[in-house]
Length: 103
Image (cartoon, rainbow, N blue to C red; front, side, top):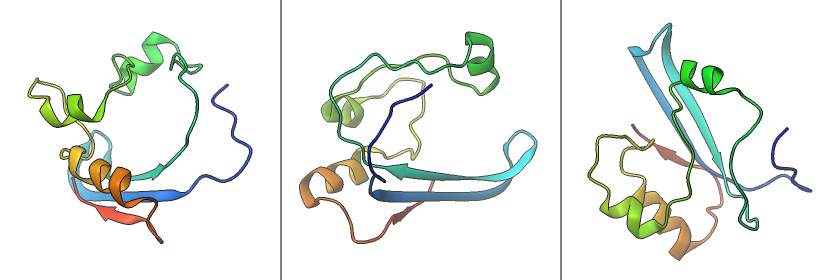
């Protein structure tokens, strides 16, 4: 079970990283990012804690843009510089086609 949406959301970013060893058992990753406007909710999903841990997910929370820009802790965003494309999306709106992102 996930968040139900009534229409296809705009595809705003595409991240492709091809690098042997980047993700255990894979030679890279492709992440597509979509903009979904919704009321606040408690993010969780249907996966168990063990299933999430196997995917290297240890928790969920909402972040404000300033928190993302100012974060200097041990955890990593994907993309690493999430603050820059997020600020561009907020100020410039939805791009005509997905913006390519690096690591």
